[in-house]
Image 1 (tube, rainbow, N blue to C red):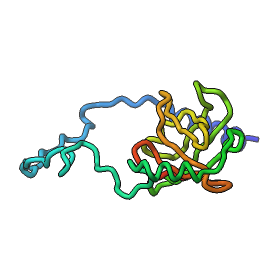
Image 2: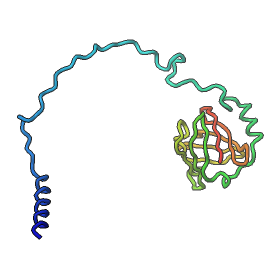
Image 3: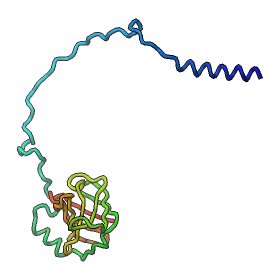
Image 4: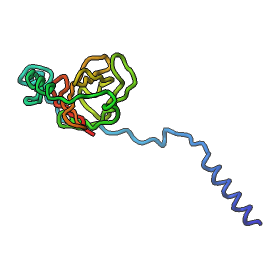
Length: 173
């Protein structure tokens, strides 16, 4: 019995010892750090903004399908399969300019279209907020209602087109 009291007293003593207040005294402070020499600062002229083309944005990629080519757009629209809103609802894998991400489309009304969004996308698709079917094309829109991409049904579970800036865009399941 005495042993149990001794162990309990020791445990209480140790826990109270951890609660002691420690006063900081300048006599225990570390000595100040010594100044170290530094290399001299160098300077040089920066290249012009935007590189060779003088723009602050990189040049648009060449060879992107439908990028500024009305004949290709018309050919894709003419050969597109019929599409319904109901067939679009759900999750899609997106390929955009060499990267991939996810797109989710619902039938919930949002402005003139339906609510939609992306996850893990870059560029224009990060601002996607809605979508709508117009004839045989599907318009992807940002939160302001501006079209950021147009796609056409090219197979049972595949849509192809481009973003407003001309990047190739494909959706598949």
